[in-house]
Length: 322
Image 1: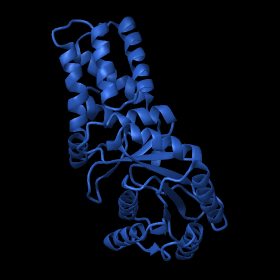
Image 2: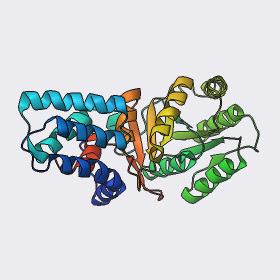
Image 3: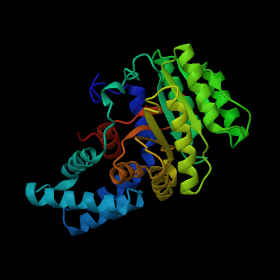
Image 4: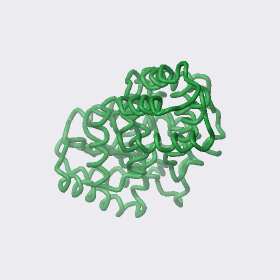
């Protein structure tokens, strides 16, 4: 199934629109006021665009890139007025966003073929970003798609993290492999993959410690977990998913820098976009780190983790322009 071929359900569209409402009001409201009464996109409008994007945490570098793209297109195509600008923004920004490698499988949570071995997702991120909740929502979605899912509680630094993952496992009917607090995280990951392989599981999701290490300590711990998992499933982890809190704006950029330097992150999940005006962080992080945003969190419910569709996202942000 193609990445953009599946249409959003009415509920998904409403959830996305509602979740991005504050960001939309901040960005598009400023842009609308800037172009009011004007018959061309001049330097004043471009300055207002720049301010709108920066205050929505798109980031300076990405904002300047967007402004340059708009300036070039306006000079070439003579776009004027708010509706033309809306279309132009949607087109240029959606084109900037990175796409997951296995995008064709996302719509129905299909698991990539791996010769009967489980697809292993190692989830990283600091405490408080919604990491364990994202794991629970992700497990729910994969299970609902007909996959057999096993969770591994390798965040052994905090008893609360183990307990929280256990609660999610019970809530959605998915087994959780765990040990006591303070156990070796790599040992938990090894046990999880061994159990999952014996059970014929399709998907394994491994939680990891979310404390802020120094870069070397973080790198060493995550590398050890990966190496131990490869003894059971040589390809593991096929996915390293970094979870970031979208409501923290520029702090999310800094967290991304730390984790990208420490391990081979290949997908992002950006949470807590509902109720924040900082949703522009999705655009900036995807552009600056060249890592695709795979999921966005738009609420507390187990169904409120959405696959990230760039065109749907920017259309919701700027209105039904494309």
